[in-house]
Length: 164
Image: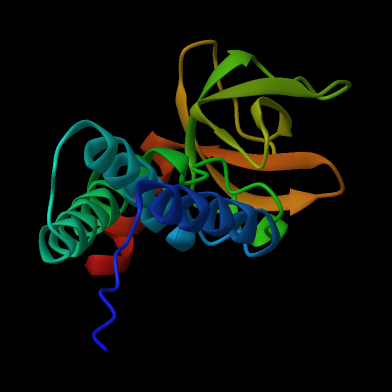
């Protein structure tokens, strides 16, 4: 007695939904793509007479394509470029532009082109150096919630003196 084993379209659909449910508990985005491929194979096998071998090959190829697309195109978009959640030392060395110059009696403001630790503008002071609106500055230290900045010109002069 020979038993023919067949994969019905609903098998693929159930597999796809199980993998999608697993993704809710294991947030790696790995089972998501296998589940999506299984759902597509279910749809294709309902529409077309496809052999079991072809179904499995289509599922594997679609899964591989989805995984490659995820790692090549989609995942890089989710990279957090703000450095949020990291220690304050990641700010030292960042370059920004003065939008409000610091005075002896009050702090100024510096703006970064990309948000740093969640904010694009930070309160800043200098160590007695005069800076004007529009000057490019580099963060040299952090005191509390204020950045200590130095103008790029003075930094370049300091590096030039160190090389001599």
